[in-house]
Image (cartoon, rainbow, N blue to C red):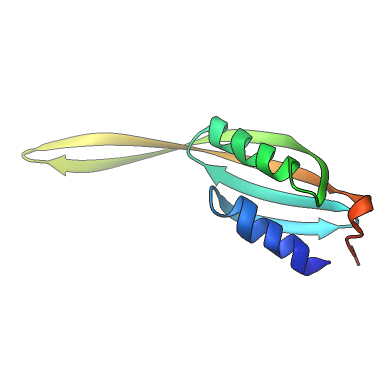
Length: 102
């Protein structure tokens, strides 16, 4: 049911990554997640994939984001580049777990 899906998001996904969007249609859960590195995305996808509600999951798209900002250190200004990775993760829910997908 939806409560199980919310628990999956709350307890498995959100502790490690930022979720900007998610939706469920049929037995497919789509999640847009952002983390510091692709390795962090991969780690989170493996955790989702290991959950009993999920049959399997894939990463359909991943892109690196770059944010430049100027900081002042003492008398100097420096440009700091922060990067993150945003990925579209598709989790196919396990039909054997009886998840109500209405």
